[in-house]
Each structure stands twice: as C-alpha cells, then as structure tokens.
Image (cartoon, rainbow, N blue to C red; front, side):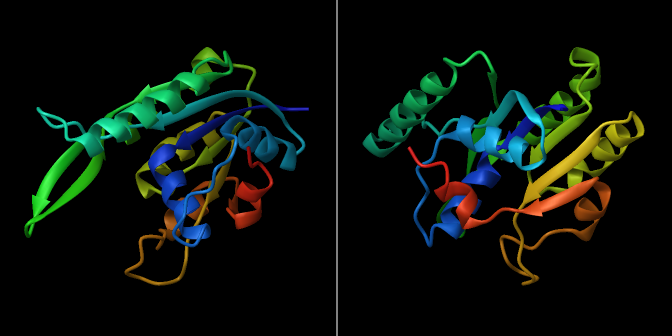
Length: 192
C-alpha cells in the first residue's frame, strides 16, 4: 500500500465545510478526516500538512478578534500535538472595500506550493499526494510533481455557476491524476 501525504488549504476547506453545512461549519476530526481520504484510495496516511492563516488582529484587538484568536490557538495547539501533523501559517490581511472590511490570506498558497515541491526531497518514497484545494495557481507544481512520478489526487468542491465562490478552473481538474468532489458525508462521517 502507498503511503500518502495530505496537504490542506485550510481556508478553502473551511469554506466548503460551511457551504455543505448549509451555512454552519461542521465540527469534525481533521486527522480522522485525512486518514479517511487516504483509506478511500487504498492508501496509508503518512503525514498531514495544514496551511492556514491565523485570524486578523488589529493593533488594539477587539473582543471579537481576541475571541477568534483564542479559538484558533486552541484548535492549532491540539492539532499540533500529533507528530503526524505540520502546521504552516501565512498571515491574514484586512482591506477596506466600499466601507466594508475584506479579509484575505497572504502567503498560504506560496507555503503550500513550497511544501508540495518539498515532498520528493524530504519524502522520496512517497508517490501519492492528496491535495485539498481549489486554486488553479497550483497547476504548474502539480504537473511538475506528476513528471516526477507522484500521483496527485485532488479533493475539491465546485459548482457550475460562473460567478460563484465555488466556480473552478477546468485546468486544475485536468492537471491532477484524479479528482474527487467533497461531499457532506465526508465531514459527517468524521464528527467529534
């Protein structure tokens, strides 16, 4: 059986959880979820790389910002206890657009791309990666890894609405060895 590395774009997975949870986030065991995805392909889980950005904190954090950071820190500290998990963090940027604040992750995709390219160097025996993401910016690195003999399995979510948050590039789907559309059952089967 193949050993698999799972790489998760946490911001994307969070949006999918909320979408499939009808506006509510699923509460599920991320490690169990990752192992289940590996098992779906007859493979053995080796390691989880979790790419995220901590919640935005202003110079004088509001009570809401403090609460979000405490929740995030608690989640990350529990996840970080497992030696099979590596957490990589970018940062959260706040922008004002038409009087409203917009929050964006910065550096997360770059860290994930670097992590993908580290696999053949740090884990030369691993020949399979499960990527949970949606960004077509990953296409070049996916194609490079496939050239190196690594099977790329994409777990993603999309709909066919052009202006939707879940409108996906066909290039991403075409670039991977195979893809699987995430379903509500994937989250529900791994509840705490």
